[in-house]
Image (cartoon, rainbow, N blue to C red):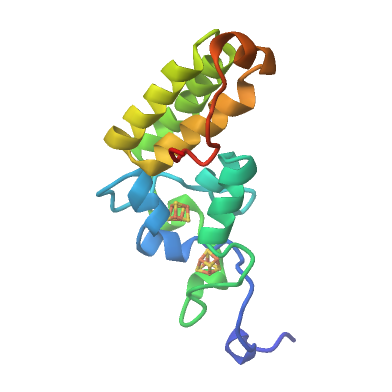
Length: 173
Ligand code: SF4
Ligand code: SF4
């Protein structure tokens, strides 16, 4: 018979019970969706909960999220957390999909950025859009824009349309 979990020394492994994210949105969630009380990025599949923002992100953006969320460092709410023992389904814990996740606007945004990156749009125009996004929608959205445009911009476009981005972190030089 396994020893009771509370006898395990910390840190305890994250089992994907989703308890922490259901309790309160994290700082990343608050930046992506200011003011929400239920994080639209929290999803359930393969018998556990996941952060869709991390699943979706690629390259440096993903590394940033993994580092910020301490993914791999263990459970942040191991005590008195019964969800760790029996991971609840969305039905069992009454977690309904939020409008943001059902419309999947982030995915649409990423496809749009990718399409823009592949189009013959000048580097200066793309840079102005990134600056506008940073001012209106915040640093995270601007970084995501830069990331997906950069990933999809053919190198020959830089010769004809001007180099982009000037700084992959989205900061001005
Ligand atoms: S952004 Fe990800 S880690 Fe943060 S609350 Fe939402 S699902 Fe959890
Ligand atoms: S409460 Fe712990 S086990 Fe559950 S998702 Fe959060 S970090 Fe992972």
